[in-house]
Each structure stands twice: as structure tokens, then as C-alpha cells.
Length: 530
Ligand code: ZN
Ligand code: ZN
Image 1 (spheres, helix red, strand yellow):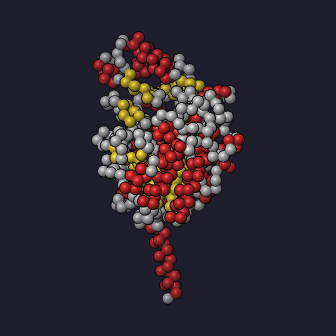
Image 2 (tube, rainbow, N blue to C red):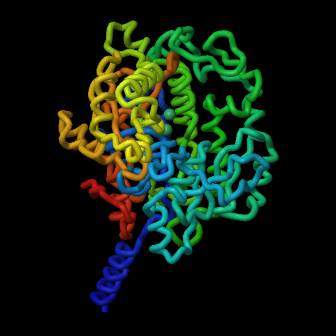
Image 3 (tube, helix red, strand yellow):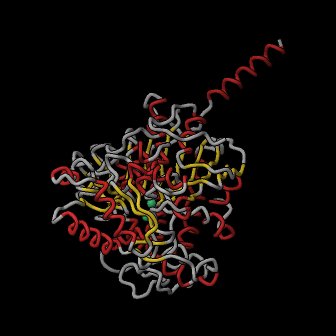
């Protein structure tokens, strides 16, 4: 009898193990986070935020993007589809549709309208995404009974992670400082969202101004506050603390303050509560993307006290979310991953001031000289439709009409671009493998090339050569400073571990699918992280 009892118990616990799934998956994307920031500010973080994820979870220390351009829309798409732009189609934030020659924004959708405000900021949906996401697969696997909610200040940071089947993707509309959505998802905002919007939190945050969290003398990991490498926000005269946060259009400037991330955290906690995420008897998914790190990073650059302060505050937001999940859902009942949609370069003038190589590439001058050379060779024919992110889109209609070969145009372009300071290599995107680039960069370019949406040619710049961004910093290149991002998994009985073998961003969704015992997204190219 006793034996039978033990056997029954064993069987019960076995089947419980086989079927047990987390009540909730929380995906956290930090917009523009370098892997290095985990360590640069380590002893400034609390014990309950980044450090807790690092100490109690799995830390993949060599996690990279394996395509370029490394930008927000492509990053979020690759995290959530386990794929690359060649397959999922989100090659950029904006691209030129090769067939029509028209410029497209990644989540534009003129067939839907804004829900939650009167602005046009909600004419958006995931329809340009060619594949499914891990959030779609999780929902399908549970016969659409689970919930998916996605939140980000950026439309693309919310819409793409939510996938095609999200219950709601919410993003920030700076017209009123409201969270909005689109008719792709719903007819009207849930009451709790409407109420949240009426609280006017963005303005309340702005009224506080922005001073450092700790005495400014303790920010020894960052360069001096008053520096020519930093931009200004609002109507301030110097890029220094305390930032007054006064001026025109402050609900837009709001994004460039750590309060943007605070707002995301506030709204996420409200969503957890109101939507009863993790309490629906299924595995729900909350996809968060913290956008203000990117806006602050672009404005002030990685060397700034502003970026350090923004990370110290984000650490507190993450700690608050984890503590909430422990209390309301229970330790080990939820699974978290944290990564970034790209990292970032340094300010080129700042690195030059330290005798490091880098510079400013003059995109406009390069295009004008290229166009002039083409006119000289072929006559006054419009042969370039546009240049987006170092990719040159040719006018194929005119090439056909005037019987000009793409190769002949490429030759002229390469010659003119070679003369530009900072130029590194010129690549025919359909023949990347015959370029003299190292294998790793050929793979990166191949993974980033989609024939319907990418340009004909691409010019690569030398490391730390940036176009625009006299102040602050930018990203999008093939180089490690843009591709190396954190990857942390935490919770749901994961054992602490550090994995230093190279992992790719596309491995995240494959790994989640493997753990959750569901199919990987439709364009998946990732491997399960062992
Ligand atoms: Zn981004
Ligand atoms: Zn950015």
C-alpha cells in the first residue's frame, strides 16, 4: 500500500513537472543598452534590479546582433521572431519599398486609426512583419486563451514585440502624453487605461525637473557634466544638471528623461494588476521596452552623467517590477528575459579628444558628389531613389528605360564614395559574399538584406565614423560597439550561470520556445542556448 502511494506520488510529481509552465513571461528590452553597462555601473546598482538578474539568473556575456543595420525596429523584430531582417522583413525603422520606390515606416498602417487620442500617432500595426513572433506562438499553443500585452514609449517597441495576436500593444503619444493603441487591436481603450491617461503623470514628472539621483560628485564613471559632446533638452542653456525640463513641446521632450522609463514601469504595474497577468490559468506574456535610455543616449552620449543616472533609475524600476512579481505571482512562477535592441557608438568628437580614431561622415556631401558623377557619366537621369542607413536604392525603372547596367552605376558610386573621409568598403548587396570583407561582416550584411526592402549598394564606414550626431551618439553599424548587448534570463527555477560562448540575438526566441515546449516562430533561425 505504502509502495503504491509513493509510486502515485512520483507519477503525480512527474506529470506536474512535465506540464508546469510559468504563469507569466516578462520580456524586457532596454533600448540602446551596451552589455558593458551591466558592469560599468555595477556597484552603483541596488541588489534587487540588474544585479539580482545577474546573480540569480543566466547571464549570456557574449550576446550579439548578427545583422546590420542595428536599429530599434529590426532589433525588436529579431528578438521576438528569433529571425533576421532577411526573413522577418523589418530591415530598418524606415526603408524604401523597392517595388514602388516609396518610403515606408516599419509599423505604418493606413487601414487602421488611433485609439485613445485624436492624433495620427496610432495609424500603426504589425502588418509589415513577415513572420510570427514568440508571443504569437505562445498564444497559438494555448488556443488563444492566454493574454499578451506590450508596452513601450515607441510604437515600434511595442507593436513588434506584441506580434500579430497581441490583446493590446500600447505606446506613448506626445500630443497629450497619453498611452494609445490602434484599431488593429481594439475599438476603445480599456477603462483602466483611460483612467491612467487622465492622471497626467508625464506632466507631473516633468514638474519635478531632473536632478541626479545621488550627489553629482559620485558619478565618477562618467565624463564631466558640462561638455561640448552633449546635446541640450527643453530650453536649457547648458547640457547640465539640474535639467529644468521647461520649454515648448515638453511632452515630447519627456522621452529624453528617465521619467519616460518611470512611466513605462508605472503603466506596466497597472497592466499586471488590471489585466490579471499571470493569474489567468495560462502562460501570459508582458513585453516591455524601456525607450528613454535610447532618447537620453542619443541626446547626451554614453560618457554622460545623464546616461549613468538613467540606468541607476531604470535599475530601481526593474527592482520594483521584480518585487511586485514576487509578491503577486510568486518567486519562480514567472520567467524574465532582459536584452537590448542594439547598443551604441561613442560620440566621435569625444573619442577624438582622447586620441582615439573616429570621425563625422558627411552623408549629404557624399550623395551629392555621387549624383554629380552619375550625371557626368550617364546624363541628367535620376538614378538614385534614396539613401537610407548607408544603403543606396537605385531607380530601377530608369535603369531599364535608359538601358544602364547596375554594375556600371556601382562602379561610379564606389569611386566617389572611396574619396569620402571615413569610407571603409562598398558592397553590392546581392553579391555580399564576393566582397573582400571578413566572413563575420559578410554574414551580418547577408542577414540584414531583404530584396524587397533593402538598397542595392551599401557603403561601410570605418569604426566610430558616424553621420550626424555632432552631440550625443548613434548606432546602426556592423561593429561590436553596436552589436554587443546584454542577455539575462531569470526566474522560473533557472539556476544561476554565466555563459561566455557567443550567442546571437535570434537565439532568444528559440530558447524560450524550447523551455515553454512550443513551436518556434515561423522564420526562426536561432539555436537553443545550452
Ligand atoms: Zn533602439
Ligand atoms: Zn536609437
